[in-house]
Length: 225
Image (cartoon, rainbow, N blue to C red; front, side):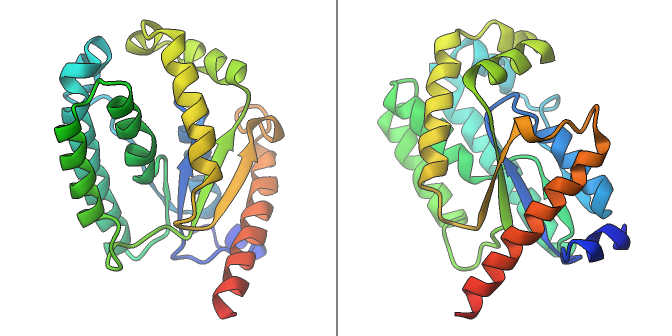
């Protein structure tokens, strides 16, 4: 464990921090940067081994329900593993985005049937929205302009994303904005991608750690009231 930085910024060794934000916004970069700085484990989204992702991008209506069920199962297993280890994790996407953004978007746009959406939502509520499900200590929400997000998606170069219409990303961007404005399940730290560059400015990680420290302290004070 990197105890020096953890102690400097008062971040508990058993903290669980989840990174949220648009596709391409830089979740994996900050996940790895924070994990390295704090000596935490990472919980990364398994894109390459996902059996539905390529199919989904070619036919939303056919595969949206299958993809969401797969994500729900995988993230639930990851969440259990994180807390069985006793915390000390940085997670590169929250389980809450699946229902609050993706499944809802496909239902409202008609690419997920009402029956499938009801089945998925009921399963999500039974698994996640209970007093027994361990929620993270902090959600770091990465935000930037739509143009910045689109540039990052293009730079990443994943074929299935390059072939996706811009209108799809515009719709998702707007939904992310609405979602985070109403998110209350755990404390939130909103972080503009203009404020750091971990690839070219590794030292900027300490500015992020300072903000995490302050947000966790606010959450601790709120719990004692």
